[in-house]
Structures are given as structure tokens and as C-alpha cells.
Image (cartoon, rainbow, N blue to C red; front, side):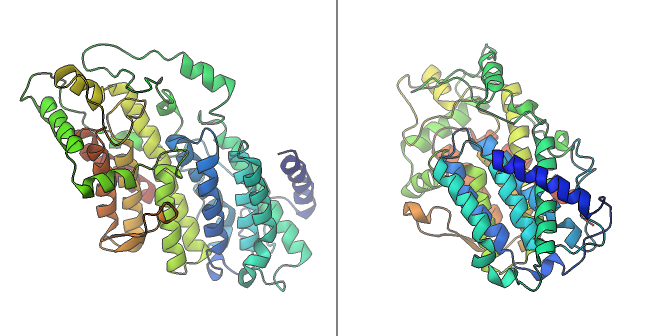
Length: 447
């Protein structure tokens, strides 16, 4: 981190020597002339790093990925003729350092510098071996992706100017990100804030669940500043009224969960485990969808411009999906199926496939963020596009074939019912909520 700050100070001095920032676009070949390799290689390294970095729970990991996605787009936006920055559209992000007017920039170098700086700042507590990989990836990128790093385009002056722009952009973006309420989730302030939370009580209220009876996770995450100002329009209608009477709408949903989890089909069991995406064991649910996008970009030999926009829109949608979900979760404060079943049907039942996560039930976070991701991917690749999901190949699952993004999102959502941890209304309302949030991300103007 000290080296990053020292380099950034050098960059500030260089920027002053190179001229004052302006609104004109940087010159040189457009970003679309380069491959997406710089972007996809960084995300392929960041995802397993998130898996092994303390504190990167699903909401936090989604935020990490969104800041990276936004940074990639903003870093090269001056190389996207006809496209505009997202500043002025996202909450409290009024400006970022623009490209130097009339100066040649090399966009893969800009992207490499931006993502390297942001990764170090977003994952400061990553294990030492991962920090070494970050440094090696940045240093070796010009050699590993030589087709995009033509020495004829990268004079010493262009390299300095491009790296300066990327690092300044990253620093400015992190200055903004640190004020959203989601920064430093392991710090003393966050620990005090979360420890002071008192869960409401009463009929149907959430209580800690077996076997760990853990305190609620990130109870104030829903108060974070989201990226987009339009999330309120996506609020779900709410679950059925709490009722312990047999035959009531609420009771029927709980019976469905109990039956599905006690006697799952082999396919339902497989689906529940495939989409679990547990933190510490996987790159989390948001990372699962970023892996899918990364493979799509690689398979289709996408260019850097396409990758930047797609990463930005999808990761912003998923991060805001978690903020919006957490806001509704803690406002609704609904008990989990395990609690309801033990109260009304079977005092000894616990979901057999996995532990119930330590936070309120409604809506399903998997459902919201999967709906958001699918909505964004459909806009770029089409509603009926089949694809292979290779996220868990290294865990022995092999590629999973889906007929569409919506089909994958639905499977991810209903995996939580099969696992015994969500009611149907939380799942169905969650997917609808997520698709609404995805639509908000797609409505951001880049033209």
C-alpha cells in the first residue's frame, strides 16, 4: 500500500507536468481495437483472491467487483468514441479525472494500471501470496498479452501518461467509494456498528438459527449508499402475512420448503449444492456471475470496449442488488424456515444440505442478484442464448449447460428452496426485484 501511495504521488507530479485535465478525449487507437484480455485476466485473478480474503462476504464481494467494473469503464471511457462517463448519474459521483486533452493514451495500459491500483486498495488484507500475484500480473501483462501491447504504440511517454491516468482515476474512485458505508468491513467502526444492532422481536421475527446461532451479518449494509439512485422503484411487495395456522398461505410455503429439503430429488440436491457459492469456498454468488461473463467475453473474443461496459453494468447491478436486498431483509425481519418449522411442525428439523445463513429471510439474495445479472447479460447476448457455466470446474462439477440466462437465474434462485433456507415468495419476488435492478443498470446512459 505504501508503494501504491508513493507511486500515486509521483503520478500527481507527472500529471501536473503533462498538463491540466480537460474534457477532450484522449487520442490514439480506440479501445475497441484491443482485446478484452487485460480485463478478463484481472477478473480471473481477482475472483479466487476474493474467495481467500477475509471479510469478503457476498454483499462485500459484490461491492468489490462493482468498483472494479466501474473503474475499468471510467478508465478507458475517453477511448470509447460516442460514449460518456457515468459520472453525474451515480450517487454523489460528480466527476473523475478526465484523460489529458490531445495526449495519446494506450488503453490496455490504462486498464492494467487502473485495475491493479483498485485491486490493491479493495483487497488490502488479501493473503501475501495473492498480493504478489497482483503485482506480477500488472508487471507481466505487456508480455503475456503482447498482441495488445505493441511497443510501437507504447513509447516511454505514452506508458507514463497512461499509467498516470489509470492510477489517478483509481485513487479518485476509491476516495468516492470509501464514503458509501461499505468500506473496511473488518474495521473497528464496522464491528462497533454491527455489535450495536438489536434485532426486533415479535411474531414472525427473525432469530439466530442453528447450529451456530450467529449474530446477524452486516445488519446495516442496506443503509449503504448504492451506486444508482433508482432502487426504490424495485422494492418487492412483501411476503404473505405471518400465520402459524395450517392451511394459511405462510404455512403452505413452509410445508413446501420442508418437503423439498427432506426428500429432494438427486437433481434438486445437485442444484442446491452447485449454487451454494459459499464465501471462503467460492468467489461468492456475484463472483459466480462474473465468472460466467468472463468466459463469455473470452469465448467470443470480445474487445476491451465491450468488456468494460458489460463488467460495469453487471457488477453495479449486483452490488446494488445486495444493498437493496439487505435493506428489505432487515426492514421485513422475517424468520427463516428452520425457525418456523421447529415452532410449528418438527422441533428437531434442520436443513440437511447446508446451514441457514445468519440474516433475515425475505427476499432471497441469491434470487435478487441472479435476476439482476441475467437481465444485464440478456441485453448484450440475447434472451435465448445457451451458454456453458464453468465456474465450478475446479471443484469437480464440470461445465453446466444452460439454455438461457433466465434459466440459470431461476435455477440459482430455487436452489435456495431445495436447500431449505428460503420460502417461495422470497425467491419469486427476489428474481422480479433483481430484474428490475438490472433494468436500472441498463438504463444508465453511456451514449
